[in-house]
Image (cartoon, rainbow, N blue to C red; front, side, top):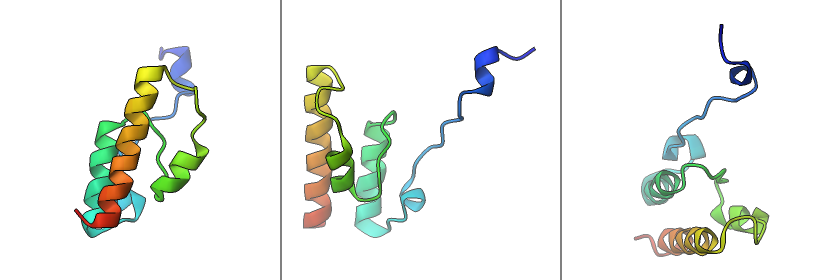
Length: 81
């Protein structure tokens, strides 16, 4: 018999640049960020993800790392690095 919670848990899908609809350099940056933040629900537009983020919803050190990674990824996409 399966575990009772297995029926309510959704399977995790691995995000890739193709899943986000991004191609080229932006897709690589998005993929790197998704690998670095596997538990986060990222939108295709990372600025939307930042706007939807609720400050204080993570421990302080995790929150600062999350925000730093997001801002760095947005800057890398803008610069085309």
